[in-house]
Image 1 (cartoon, helix red, strand yellow):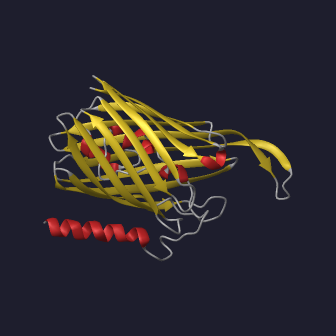
Image 2: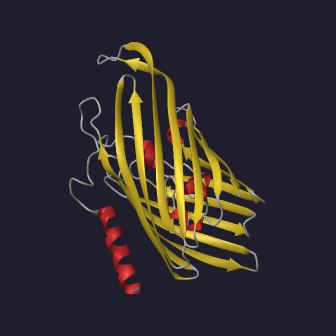
Image 3: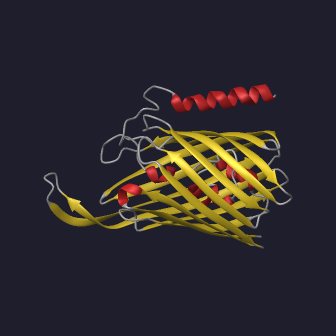
Amino acid sequence: MLKKLLILFVALSSLAFAEGRYWNVGLGGTTMKFLSMSVSPRMAGLSGAGVADPGRASEVTRNPLAMSVVNEAEFGINQMIFGEGGADNFISLYYGLPLLEKFTAAFGLEFLGYDDIEGRDENGLKTADYSAYAWAGQAGFGSRNKVFNWAATARFAYQTIDDESAFVIVGDIGGSYKVVRYLAFGATLTNVGYASPYDDVDESAPMALQAGITGILPLFDRWEIHASADAYRRADYEDPEWRFGGEVTYLEFLMLRVGYAIRPQTEDGISCGIGMTFGMIVMDYGYSPRPAFEGGNHYLSLGLRF
């Protein structure tokens, strides 16, 4: 059984480096890229690493395997505050609900909005300002086991820029396996599906594959170190990203995070974050730099477990 699972993991991971039209759609050939951005502060603080080791229900809109850690019903909100040159508003709602003894249902809703975008014609001359917005809704179902977990999500997203609109119908799948108590493998394939033409131009959904490994080292009686290394490939990327993240936890009360990502298509950068739990309330903060814009993005999350 272990051999089969490892073979499956390697096969899925190899797709991150696959050649062909399906993966290499060219820069600018995908639409609704916000569906591949980090949303939760935990993921942002780890530079997107840790697909095999989700920690919060707040991650379900980007990592379907986050359903495997939803042991209590949780509802919450993620807020992303952009630096210079970013959107005006990005809010994500999530809800995780344990079912029976070993399953979880999860739901998500997110909204991205830009106002007062400066318009330019084909000659570069200024025209009237315009706005853009996008929203997405999803529902998912997955397992909650100690060793092997799987999850699947269906998503609908809609985008309008000025007077042009498009939509996508996509899905996510993922699987993870704990070889021993302190070592886990995981892989997800996200945003696979159909994208409608935008302004009579065919584009693809931002399909992406992520595969990674996480090691967990106990310290004393109540501390743990989680170290993750992941490979990430999106359909319009020529080369994969390499993501590394570390998290020090004290029970479920305090989590300190740091990450580093090697991004050939954009910018390398160090991220960081912190998480805290106070009874029914869970809070997270993350920061991700954007050197080209002389600033960075801030991520906030507030959840309620019941």
